[in-house]
Image (cartoon, rainbow, N blue to C red):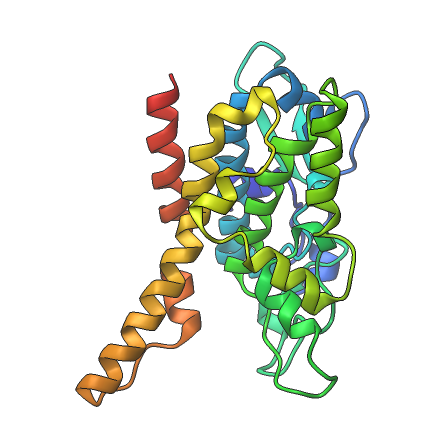
Length: 271
């Protein structure tokens, strides 16, 4: 298993159920600290956080058949083992993990709520708004990746606290729209951000304002997936062939490789 995955899980017998074989590392306050503590002192470590947690999510899924199901600002910690060395980020709290090897075509679905509201991906939110028993959406790896994007956005607004009252009020107004209201309303509010102009107008605090283009480009991976799906649908209709499924397109475009491309490009220009 990938070493970053091993930081989050311990393995026993592979024959046992994921709930038994996958254990969250006991978090010792002296060894692990909240994500905010690290980003407050080192805002540019958001690149490393996104990169490492993306690798962890990839390894969980491909090596252990697990989806975390609750990627959030408070569930990402950093390790104090080498204060002056490379920073290491870990995922915590696997209470909502999903064993993809143990679910059938009908469940568990995103109607069995996965995630913390401000960080939930849009598609599961939309699905939660549907009447019980209607067509449901299986939680996928790209939903965990999207949750990580919302964590990055949240970090750029909520990490710094020594800010003006006016900025604090503006930030509170933005983030409250991601955590209050019904599922359909929150999904609609999040959907409205998916243009570069709207995203760039979010009130990032001073230390994170230089990272605005990085955050915009992260979200472009999702926008591109939607654009590709629309184009493939049009092409399939025109050429009388079957288009790829939404899941296939999203797995291709909202992927570890695409996220790495964005992270590496912005790390280079930010040095």
